[in-house]
Image (cartoon, rainbow, N blue to C red; front, top):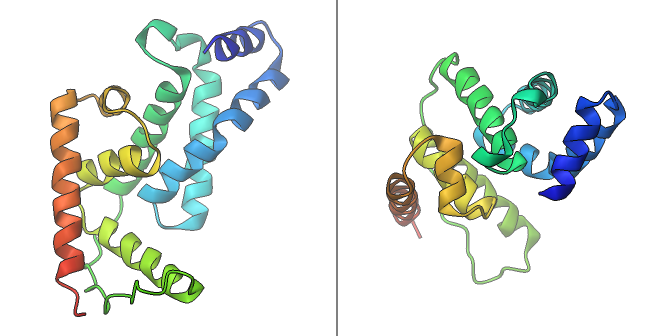
Length: 177
């Protein structure tokens, strides 16, 4: 956190190149969140750039007392994704294909198919559940930080994650063996 504050202060003092340090520090986390919320590759790249530009332009408004820089950045990304998703035409959900034989985890093809199934299953979740699930289970963020990103109490976040897991279990158990 102190590294972030020092780097932010350098940027605010006019060292534009210092922002690159923040980008390099958080780009993996940022791209992972956006990639799990938006399927279209070119849109993901545009949303990531838009998020970073917004963060740069509004860096002076970041308040470290409100939370970590990563939380602030992921909140911007989440909001950009939600705004983009709201503008999209809903697409019908395709049924999940046959369950992958998970007895052979070394098989790269089976693993690829499993993750494709998971992506399709995540698409079937309501957006609030999907976002909470991705932040908790894929990003590994604590519930309190997710609550700050989502603007919701921790109890609500726990409920969303629980409902997402329940729905995913149901979707995977509905697939033929």
